Structure formats: C-alpha cells, structure tokens
Length: 386
Ligand SMILES: Nc1ncnc2c1ncn2[C@@H]1O[C@H](COP(=O)(O)OP(=O)(O)OP(=O)(O)O)[C@@H](O)[C@H]1O
Image (cartoon, rainbow, N blue to C red):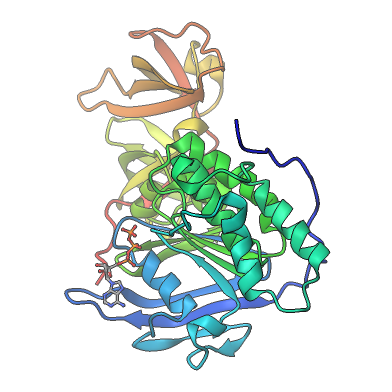
C-alpha cells in the first residue's frame, strides 16, 4: 500500500473557551415557491455545542445552514453570529466552515494536500509552522491515508477527507450538511465517532435525515418538519420524551398504542388500550381524561419474559409472541397485546442480538412491562403544520 497511516496523536492546543452564544436564528422565516421554507424558526448554538438538525427531505435543514453561512437572507427574523446581527457580514468573512452535499476534492493533490489547503489559504501569520503541522496531523488522523489521491478513495474515505479539510483551521462554528450521505449506518457511526476528538471546542450544527446521526453526535437535537421547529432539547431526552407522533417517529422506531385516557394522577395517566388492557404512562398535556390518545414506548424500553404477569410484577401485561426476527445486530420480537380479545395491539420489542431471549418462541405466552416514565401519552393525531 502506497499510503502512510498517520499515527501521531496530539490533543488540540486550544484551551476550552467559556460557554457563550456562537450563533442564533431568531424567528427566521423564508418563503418558498409553494409553501414556506422556514416558519419562525428559532435556534441557539453555544460554544463547543453539538446540535443536530433532524428532519425529512425538504424540512428546511439546508436552508437553515444557508442562513447561518450567509448565502441566503431571511425574509423576516434575524441571524446572529457571536451575539452580533450578521446581516452585514458577507459569507467569506464569517468565521465558520460549511461542508455541503457535493464537496469537491482537488484531484491532483493527495489527501494531505487537500486537507492542508485551507491552512495555506486562511491561517494568518498568527498560526506558526509547528501549530500548522500539529493541526494537519490531527486532521489526518480522521483519514489516515496521507498520500492517496481522491480518485482512489472510498465514499467513506472521501467523507472523512472532506470533514478533515473543513476542521483543519479549527473554526469556532462548523456547519455540516449531511456529510455522511450515502454511507451505510455503521460507516456513518464510525465517521461521527472518529470525528468527536477533532470537534473539541468547536460548535457543530449537523443537518441530517438520520436519527442515528443525531444520537451518535450527542448534544442537542432540533427536529424540523416543513420548515417548522417541532421540538428541541438534549437528544436522549427528545428520543425518550417526544411531544408528538411526528417527533416520536423521526427519532426512531416507536410503539404507538391507541387508547383512551381514563384518569390522571400525580403525573401518571391510566390509559385503557383499544385491545382492552389498561396501562400507565407519563401524563402530558394530551392526557385529558376521556380523550383518545396514543401511548408511546420505544421498543427497547419494554421488558419481556416467559413468566406470568403476576410473576413479573405490578402493571405487567400478558402478551403472545407472534414472531421473532434477527436483523443484523438486533433481535425484533413482535408481540400481541390482548390476544384473547377482538382487537389485539401489536407491540414491538427489540434487543441487541447478543442478549439472549431465554428461548422465546413464536406462539409463546409472555409477560411485558415498562417503567411509566418511558411511556408517554401523545395526542391521537398531530396538528397540521400551517
Ligand atoms: N432560499 C430559498 N428560497 C426558496 N426556496 C428554497 C430556498 N432554500 C430552500 N428552498 C426550498 O425549500 C425546501 C426545503 O429545502 P432544504 O434543502 O432546506 O430541505 P432539507 O431539509 O435540507 O432537505 P434534504 O434532506 O433533502 O437536504 C425545498 O423545496 C427547497 O427547494
């Protein structure tokens, strides 16, 4: 192999800066041809923070990045950079790096040459030779193939090179527009994991359609759809406590069990499911006694065992194993709740494939349970975004 793996390890020399606002969108709106692109969107990004903009195609993620980078102006609302109104700051003067969808690598330069280019072009005399070399070595660790040409790189290596090139100047704000597009889930996860040490001290906004990216990036997530902000918060919190069906589905696999709220007591709602069983779930504003609802619970939050509900404990429910499927690194159990009644509900339970399922088989009677805090009462339908 002609390439030289880069082995030097070096921690970034920057001291961790005090937390402050690096950038913000304040109630920005942007009109589109047929429907609004952004609808009074508000976001704040602090020093060193990681924020994933998660949403389906056309949600307005790229449009939000274009506003921050200055290539588009909002129709209403404002963009702030470093606490300052950014309208008069041209894109080239904004101290940020933008990695778009179709970044081009210079074909006549090797990986190291491509990554070093921004250092040559942008770093002023304040960045000494030793610091430049150090930054280049740090960035090269993400790729590890210093002299390979772009035409000889795999899609993952290209993505790594593009990211390394964007980070080599250590900008305070990095905008990443789905830099792992086209890579399979394990490659996406590996790139984001390897990226983490390079991102220290930098604020990162990652636009993605993939909830796995948001979870791997860590930090906060802002969920967008049709230009509207649906929910924002720490990614694990939004994953476990979605406010709507849309957010529940956009963050990953979700059980949504139709039912009706019977009572609410001490932040816990008692819900009678359509299949006839009664369950507990965290009360939300949608938990109004007498109102139809859906009970949300993530598949990995459901406990299952080949015992009776009485043996499993208070609140456990009887279920029937309808099917078991192995999907790569995951086992997926399909259960029927209320199988005796006229309208059984399907409940999906997932486990890492390495976790033994104590010999569960299709057709077996089991008991299931969950902690009420991981189940949530959601409205039967989401409001229309207008
Ligand atoms: N400045 C603009 N003016 C008018 N329309 C725009 C502008 N920017 C984006 N759009 C339109 O707004 C919609 C949302 O586009 P955007 O690229 O932001 O979505 P996205 O969430 O990034 O989607 P994807 O995941 O497919 O990249 C698209 O229909 C796009 O054509």
